[in-house]
Image (cartoon, rainbow, N blue to C red; front, top):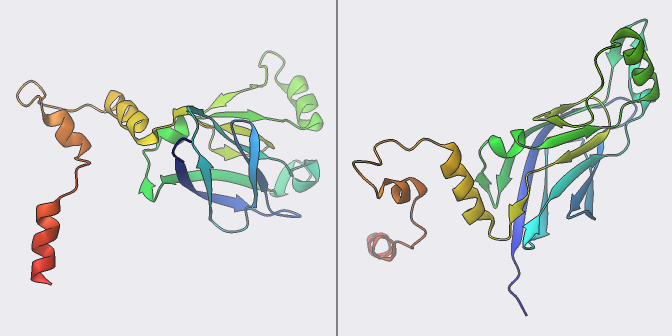
Length: 193
């Protein structure tokens, strides 16, 4: 029997209420693992990591009735905005969000108005880095490996510029930090206490 690789995600968000709050289904590898009513500012969920992992957030309850207008002006609306991600309590770089893809499900009325006013501009079916949502839809995070932290470090290393590697080739490991416990330091602290 293999080891269990549980990973905890904490998502911070902003939402607005109109008729009711946004409701998000959480999917891991296309299996429903939870549903959250977004009436606070964050929620957490855990996954049992597989060899490859895809997390999706599916906004399921917004309809046209949630967009309240007076004339052509929106006076109240249900919206959702992704702000921050922590994994196992550790702040994750913003690119983990901005590399995600948002697939909106536009309302029929919006599609018709768009077709009339922007004849040569088709509606995007998938939008990269869309963190503020006005339509129901699905946000898909980047696919990641079972060993989340190894995968994360490799991508972080590719995205960051680590200076002076020519003078200090070990700098890349110093940049990452050591995963080895500091037993001698812990022992000294225990002696002081």
